Image 1 (cartoon, rainbow, N blue to C red):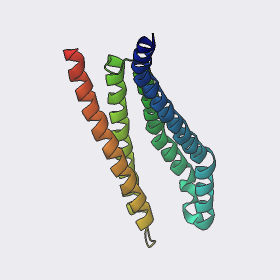
Image 2 (image 1 turned 180 degrees about the vertical axis):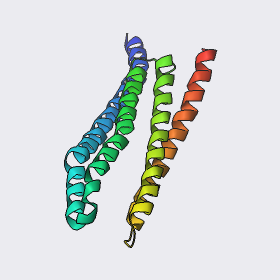
Image 3 (image 1 turned 60 degrees about the vertical axis):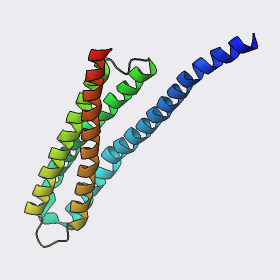
Length: 169
């Protein structure tokens, strides 16, 4: 009796650990999404208004800046949602499914889209801002581009691995 209870507990324990780790990752995703949403709602309009007050000659760029920033955050939120879906399919034991492959493909494309937006934003910043120190803007852009590149690379690799493994299974 004691042996069979031990075997049952031993088999279910990895499942509980996997669900606990995906639950932790889901909580982290919700936290990241909440912070990004707070930045979109509170910080970005304040940054645009502050810049318009400091540089009245370029105040007309306030609305295009906000539109570009919100457009930039769209693939970010899509990637967060796809990551959440991927973790949900892992919880259900369908890590090697077509849903997981499509989620990774979408995450990869979202990361590549963000890289494109950042490069275009950096080029626009260099072209539009003259006579001011923009190294902090360039540095932030490079860091976000690096992070997005790593995410795109890993999502692409995992997508290929899961697609190949799906054919084998």
